[in-house]
Picture (cartoon, rainbow, N blue to C red):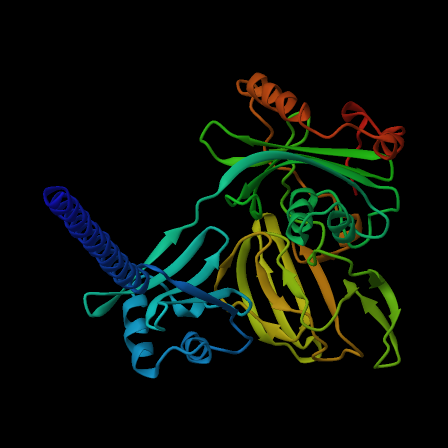
Length: 430
């Protein structure tokens, strides 16, 4: 009996000791797990402090310089100087623009990690600390390009028609540039006009539109008359727009020195009553009503032969073109070119104003041919060269390819096209 009790006692003690050992091992495992979790948490904190960047976004304000924008967004004064020094070799700060996005990246502890400035829809200026100093570079923004068909109907202006179609205003400007040799978008659009086009859209990874690319084909129906423009590269690789039959869209001059909605308030006349001098005298130009500061473009390439104050003409720009032509842009509030400068067709040369003998903001535009003032409203504009005979089959194939991508001609477009004149029936536009 004593042996049995001793045996039971040994078993109980062994079990107790085993339980204590198991409990100790569990406790050690738990302690080790806690230690591992603490180590992982500490490592994660280090990695977060090193790798996680929180961005704060803002926009440059009008009249503000780059350093002022950085200071306003909380960048320490002692960091601003080195940031500017690093960025100057890769970015000209004269191109810093109000309204563009500026982002400041900081660590979770508030340390400066990056400065990003959106130069344009496809490029960022990127500045970041590196080895005790700052490194700057221009980074391309990844975009995806796709061809998209767009259509719309004009009720009052092309600008509104494009935005009503869900597109950005700059697309209206591009259309006006393409058809600017045939259509004056200040005076020619009529309610019921329609447009269709195929344009490249460059989009960010999230699907948002970054910027428009090339307009590959465009069609505008103005008061029943159809105009079509096809982008094509000539034998030397130069891009230009051509009508559907291969004739050049481009002419020596644009149809207007202003792009949008500037009604003519005074036409070319040999006897007009002057509102200030109160006498009848010739008005050998065209007055366009436009708001103060509206941009003025040269209708053709040439050389500036005068840019300055011109007496009753106010601030004046005179440009000499080829073939004996000269144009004058008067009453400007600001001149953006200088005498002797070579300018390209469509280049901005000044801003609308009312300097000189003017009752209010407007542009007085005049044109001479071989020293004689001409009526620009009736002046026939000479075209450029058409598609060559050797390239015509390629042109027609590309034209038909893009036409197939145009949105279908719905009832509004079909109605506008009903009285359209065929290309072979066109007479020169005056």
